Amino acid sequence: MVNAEDRINNHSNTDKINSANIQLQNGDIVFRRGADGISDMFVNMNQKDKRYSHCGIYIKKNSIGYIFHSIGGEDNPDEKIRKESFPAFVNPNTNLAFSIYRFPFTENQLQRLDSIVTLWHKQERTFDMDFSLCNDENKMYCVEFVVKAIETAVQDTSYFSRSRIDLKDFDFVAPDDVLLNKNGRKIVEEKFEY
Image 1 (spheres, rainbow, N blue to C red):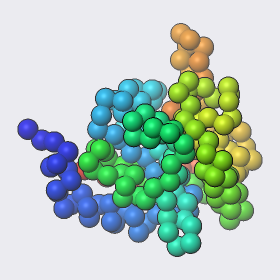
Image 2 (image 1 turned 45 degrees about the vertical axis):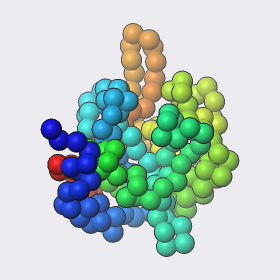
Image 3 (image 1 turned 90 degrees about the vertical axis):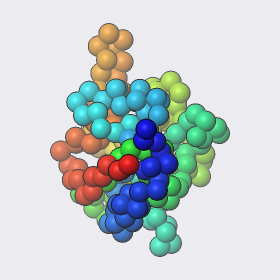
């Protein structure tokens, strides 16, 4: 039987992480596919592409890069926007795959994105357990955080499409709304090996 230990101990997975880490640039979006039941649930929120369950924004500070992301649950009990290294974010212990996408941001847009993400992290904005796009601007789920930060930085509130669940008349953004955006370009896509 294969398990997380096999993914962790496979040196090719470490090589994949290290190779991807040196390719990261400010403003890149990093997607990951978690290896748990909650991730399975989030993958199914995607309407077209069910590869990824979570995402964050890469921001480089003083020569050190971090993935900023909004996450709740037992992984982050205080539910505050989290900042962690790329290797920690895509850790094969808890993830099956990852991908990096790059958008054609101008230097001014990247500076605004950096400022917005840094401010929201400093304000300790929290995870939105209601998955509502407009109820409370101080709470955001993972993709909502990414979308709102980017749309604020590029000054275009329609930069990303929204998904809809017709039965409940519920609008939301899912990982594939970002992943399949025509402006994004895949830089790296990796599946962890056992």
